[in-house]
Image 1 (cartoon, rainbow, N blue to C red):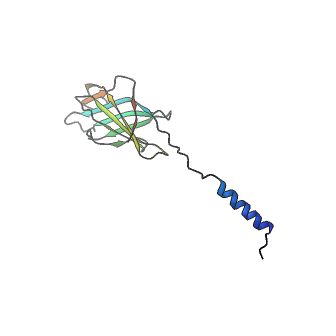
Image 2: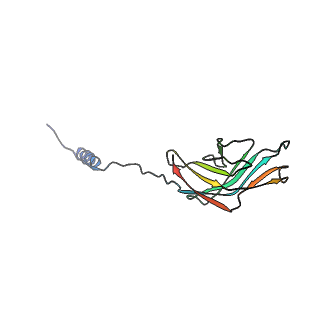
Image 3: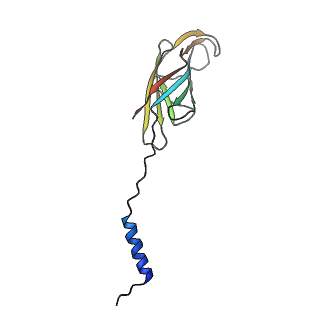
Length: 154
């Protein structure tokens, strides 16, 4: 003989309720920035015999934050080399030389997102012979205050 108790009825009611609930899906919390800015771009190329390092430096900001990062590399570097900024989720490369302007390419990993986004912006520089602050060499600077580039997903 089968008997029903209040406890068994409660268990039956709960099991019916839980199977009727919709499945919970994880929300995608990925918000990608669409653009970035670079400002204060400088590049120094030491003359022969100058022991100071080649240096490239600028400030970086993206459209999703109000803070800026410093991006600097000191030492010999070429157009295909990639360097981390002050936040290791952002890195960059620069393909200009002491005799020609070039492009800065930004690579960024965004928290909560899979993959990397990147974007490039051409940096027109004015380069002049200089002795200060690193000794004899060529100092290249961006004449505009800042430049804006667009990100694309990789």
